[in-house]
Length: 214
Image (cartoon, rainbow, N blue to C red; front, side, top):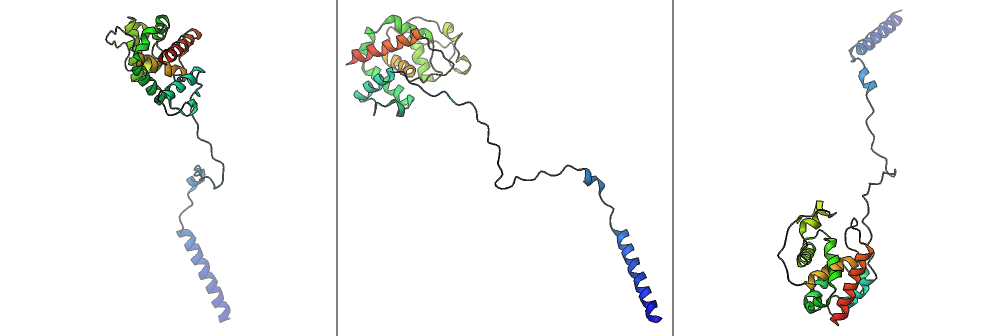
């Protein structure tokens, strides 16, 4: 009898302790059930979205006449090699400019009408050195800058809009060769449209310059 009473007392005591512990526990946080789940990091090996890329620049397609220019510059020691595929346009323009400086006497034999067509086209780039080369050519023909700049497609990015230069009484061949090199290398901005008439003038000027410099 004493043993049975002890067992009942132990059971009652355990039940009371469990009830007290349950009462001491905090109530469940119900708001946690309605929270958005935290984003999980991507698993290793899972495919990731490829980064977006902007529009690719237009690939250069040098004119056929570029080969003649590069060969002449190479023969004259202005360029290391006559290969257009490995020639930096900036290097070629600088070489053509030096060539023009050394052969200034050729300028007086070039076609005035073809030179004027190149001048009226405007600047084939907004790069400073070429811009002022174009301005000096226009100054020779007394072409006002506002006439050209007002319709130029590079106006928004150009820092020299409507800026006049001194009047020149001769065509500076180094300027002309820099401009011609840019055309035949197809190194001008994509938004500029070269007409067949202008291309014919550029090619004729290049051909005549090469022939007269030999």
